[in-house]
Image 1 (cartoon, rainbow, N blue to C red):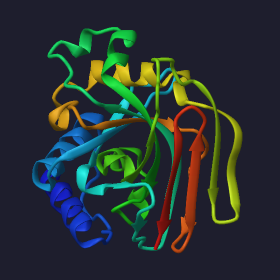
Image 2: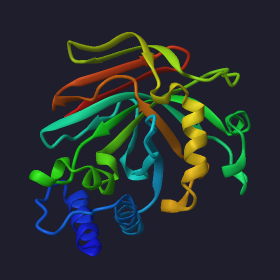
Image 3: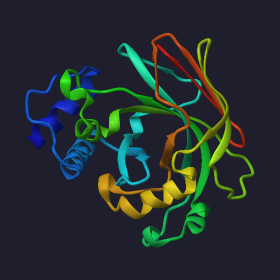
Length: 242
């Protein structure tokens, strides 16, 4: 089962298509992570990680491929619709020490710089299983890419929990005003990932970005849409979906 999922997900990524699974879906988080690692083993470098940290639930995470990171202002092809999320990211600017899993949140802050990002969300799966939680996790939590915007200038280590942000897609205003980072702390989300990730998909490395959760509910938009975001204290980011 695992081998078939790995092969089908790799083919879907390489061809820009979706597949309708006929084999049994992954049943556990461990199986989903095994599939993630198998895809990474053949697809190449990891450029970022996404996380989900919800009260009362185990933390989950997924790699984002380096080839799917684009800089602000890029044009990104869309199959039909694309999900978009404005987020606070943390760029790892220096090599983490081998014992980083045991470092405090404040100590880990010395290794990162906040960056404003747009996560792109799309599935490689079609049919009834596309909404299955373990299938989504195996499919890198349905990540399709990351648009990297401004890095915070002159950041002194203050956390991001409640922020002022604006996010538009064409003429639609998705967010304009106060917003909360999921879990209430971008740095604590980074620290939690550092504690749990280990060497999964290569582990955390200098040059990667950890994204800390959407500042608003997921929105899907059509190709041809200009998307722009801003987070106070960090900067701006934009992308055109084509």
